[in-house]
Image (tube, rainbow, N blue to C red; front, side, top):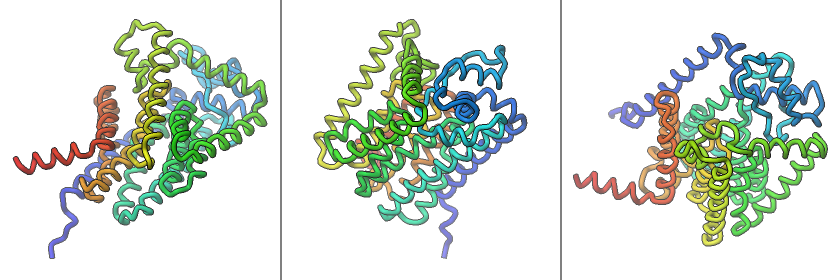
Length: 403
């Protein structure tokens, strides 16, 4: 009997996984060759300033911009600190961040990355559990697990020290709760996603019109987190936090020209645009996206995988603030698209499960080598088409077979 191990599918898997492992090993070797110096110029510097204040100063001063600036100058000199970025994340992870942060910057970074890995593994386990409830085979589960572990944007977020893994944990819990009939878990997952308020709000509001229990659990979870934040940083700390958010949204915001969203596209297409017009476009698009999803939720009888995938894609394109480390969210639309393709009998599960791996490699190639913003927009559009118009792929298959 002929062995079926050496086939095209397995060859593609081996090539894709190998390419990612080689690149990641190279990046890690480069980084660890001079770790102390290289991690001083990454996003973690902002996270560290928050953790340092929590550990050595007072939680009530977490959003004291002058103090944040002084902490960052302890790591980088005034000459090296070319631009000040404030710590503007909600204080959901404050206790954990304070625990892992010490005066040793490098050790703090490594402990923080370990925390991020744990968050991500929990989220990935939830997604694997979802596939298990859909009766996907063990081999497919293993492949998705490997694809998830190697997902390029997640790896990049580790290197930067960004807390995107916690955002993905919240969205994974939301997705798992929705499709296992656990509205409470879904709402709590959205509440955890307020680590990026602009994403959580867009995803939550449509549930006012369908499966309202998700909305109310989101509201309850949000109130609990608000109470936790109040007890931690106090009323003045909350006021400082909202002032930092206002500062972040003034004018063009921080590094808006490199964002892969509506705001970034408008700024790149019209470099001379003024801040007011840009904000009208940005927040107008955000409001219309929410309205569109609310109407869609109201008109549908059942929230399906295609709705969730589309909502996440909308959150990426229309959110006022979206940087590359949060592209890790693409793991879920790529998974939901794979589920849709398999349910529509367009691809068998053993081929549909390759989609997250393909998305990871696509992002790796275009971000690490080509660095094309357009390529990311094309990917988001492509996932949207696969989610909502899978028949287009079926028609293409038929045309190829006729040729």
